[in-house]
Each structure stands twice: as structure tokens, then as C-alpha cells.
Image (cartoon, rainbow, N blue to C red; front, side, top):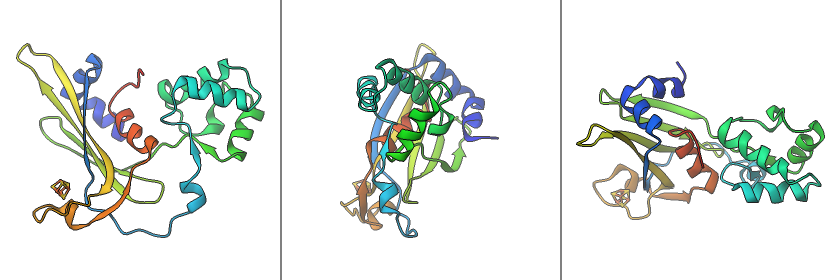
Amino acid sequence: MTPMAALRNAPPIMRAVQLRTLTIACNNSTSPVTLPSVDKKKQDSRVLLGMSELDLQQLALEFGQQKYRGKQLHHLVYKRKVKGIQDFSHLPLAFRNELQEAGWSVGRSPIYKEVTAADGTVKLLIKLEDNRLVETVGIPVEDEKGSFRLTACVSSQVGCPLRCSFCATGKGGFSRNLKRHEIVEQVCLYCLCNF
Ligand code: SF4
């Protein structure tokens, strides 16, 4: 079963998603993981995930495309959740190739591990492009009226510089801040991306 399928099969989560109510809390990630060498070029590559519709329209114009191509990009990234530029079948092949040749990517991060609790809480470990791992947690909460909302606890850093003695994350030290698309990715995993 795919991670998203598991999310869909967790009834409280699903109800929360259907209600499209999302609360986001920021925290630091779990302990940093020691990893193989980082491809600096790839790490610095440009990514579409996290860009607004206006930004994407501007990007389209910069590539000599019409403005509406930016709207299509927005739809493909956030609504269709297409993971690769070459799968943007709505766009001309030449535009797709130019984006790729210029170093652009969608910027999705794969799920490395998933744990679901009996109450529907889901913990996901996400693998970043430099192979570091960060954690995000989705917690379904029912209010007194019986409505569900989903609280997403989102990582903003790999590790933590505060080093509290009781905390495993602190013991591992601080590695780096997350990039915009790495934070947006965590939200995308829990919601339908209607933004
Ligand atoms: S080291 Fe302290 S501040 Fe940092 S994540 Fe752990 S408990 Fe929180």
C-alpha cells in the first residue's frame, strides 16, 4: 500500500482531509542522519514546488512562454501532484526540455518510512535530496461538535542547535534549515493542496 493510500485509509485523517481543515505546527526534525556525499549541483537546483502561481507565471514568461503556462504549471504541481517535469503532458515538449536543461525540477521528496498509530496519527520520514531524513506528523483531532481537523507537525530544520539534554534531536546537533519546497512537501502529503 502506498503511503498516501495508507493516509486515505485512516478514517480520522481522511475525514480531516475532506473537511480541508489543516493546522500546521513547526518543529525541528528527528536526529540528523549521516549520509553519503551531497551532489551540490542538484542540491542547489531550482524547484517548482513552493512557488506561487504568480511566480510560475513569471517563470513561464522568462522562458518565452505565454502567461497561462504558469497557471498550468501551478495546476500540475499542486493539484495533479505530478512529480516529474517530463510528465507535464499539458506543456509543450520544448518547454519541458528547456526547464530541465536550465536545472529546474518539481522538487518532491520521497517518503522513506511511515508509521500509523491506532488513533489515525501518521508519522512520515521524508528523504531529502541530500539524503537527510526529516519527520512530519499528521494528528487528527475531533472537536466537541464531532468535526475533525488535521494538525500537521512540520519540520523546518534538520536537527536542532539547542541541544536539550533529554532530546534525541538535540543530541544530534544542527545540520541545516529546510528549503521552502522541503517544508511545502510535508504539507502536500496531508492536504489536497488547494492553495
Ligand atoms: S533540542 Fe530542545 S529545542 Fe531542540 S528539538 Fe529537542 S527539545 Fe526541542
